[in-house]
Amino acid sequence: MPQRKKTDRAYITMTEWTTQYGGKAEGEVKAPAKLLPFECCPLSLNPYTDPVCTPDGLVYEYINILQFLQKHPHDPVTGNKLRVADLVKLHFHQNAETQKYYCPVTRKEFNENSNIVAIRPSGNVYLLEAVDQLNVKSGNWKDLLTGESFTKEDIITLQDPGHPERRDMTQFYYIKQNVKLAHEHWEPAKNINMSTSTERVLREYAEREAQLEKEKKERAVQEAAVAAGAAAAAASSGFVTKSSLSTAKPMSQRVSAQAPSATSTAFSAAVCLERDPFDVVKHTKKKGFAALVTNRGVLNLQLHCDVVPKTTENFLALCESGYYNNTVFHRLIPNFMIQGGDPTGTGKGGESIWKKDFKDEIRANLKHTEAGILSMANRGPNTNSSQFFITFDAAPHLDGKHTVFGKVVGGLDVLQRLESVETDEEDHPLEDVVLQSAVVYFNPFNELDKEEEEQRLQTQEREREQEALHDEANRGQWYSRPTPVLPKTDKKGVGKYIGLLSTKPQAAVSQAAPQSERAKVAAERKRLSVTFEYEAPLPKARRLPVHRGAYGDFNKW
Image (cartoon, rainbow, N blue to C red; front, side, top):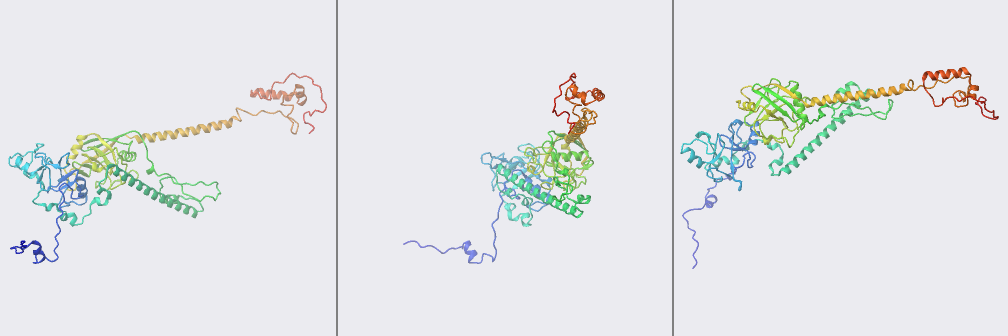
């Protein structure tokens, strides 16, 4: 016989306990924990490429935590107070084949069950077992790779498998408090994995769209200004007054109309405004050179006037005007940058030479690749004014967002001294770093102004020469090419001078004019020294036969 299924048990199952015997509390639903992989940033939820960690051992992407701390001075996971200066830059070792992180001592790859630690002074990441065996138990308090000294307090635990609650995304402080992240207001495509060419195409498309939108707004402003000017002109009997010009908004280009005549009504009155200097971009092929004299040394700068003309023109003009003199560097972050250019010293002031913000000049060949890069500070796209910053290290996350317009070519030791200045919790230097003066060694835009002035003077000189030649040509008809002085005659009618200035034989001339008149003509001709084509030497007089019926000298008409 087949064996029957045995149902008598000395225990009950979990399902029976929860469904039949009241083991499940009414309305209780416990969601499974959502653990974040250890190689991902808690803010972007993507694998990090430039990792830094907090003293609590939480690992972030540097650019993400930096932008978060600019608005919220606390840890986004724990909610504890956190400063940028507390961050520790990490150095992971990655397997070239598997692209996974591993311990450089044991050669074991990290996973969700690995106990991972970091050494604060060096930033190197190891397995805990390697540090425990080779450092703690042996009393060797030197980094296993670099040999830097450290203490037991410098060992930071990045991952502990026994306490996975730190990686529970549902318990993150910024998620529970519904804190808006900075990157949520940026480009949505940032969360999509794209190739470099795709990112470039999308960026160019966005820039083109923004430029078209800006031009559309400018045209609307111009049309409104023209309409307002025309209305004011019509109200004042067709004349454009000075008040109407002063109240009109500035335009980016000349708007004018030309009437065919003073009394014509075919064209309506329009406003004629000069082109705004803000829209004039000067182009040069030369570099600019300047120096920032601080209370800790001199920084010599090379400016890319040939690549970013508008930004460098603004910076050089502010330097020459003394705008930066006796200002302070209000912000300093070690391993990142030092920022200045605000006369108020608060980071909220400053303006350009045009009294308004100007647009970015992002160039693919100018990036934040090293220490000493000079770049413009801004509040967002196309909001450049007077503030600038100088990097202490490479900052690739700023590429495409800030205009690079120069670099430090002398005084890198001074830059290192500036980096060593201590700061407070808000990244303000505890000791004033003063920009005493800004000296301009060479400004290529001044040469352009001189060349334009020389061209203007040459043009005026040519115009004066042409006017002089024109006047000389007109005067020549009176002085250099005088009209002949015709002899006097008592005759009237069409042929009154026939016989006086002609190539007729001497006999005819002698019959037509008296000898005294001929003498006067010869004397006048000798005085002027001019030979006329119709004043050929008179032939010797001879008698000619008289023909009846000839016209003669038209004296009978």
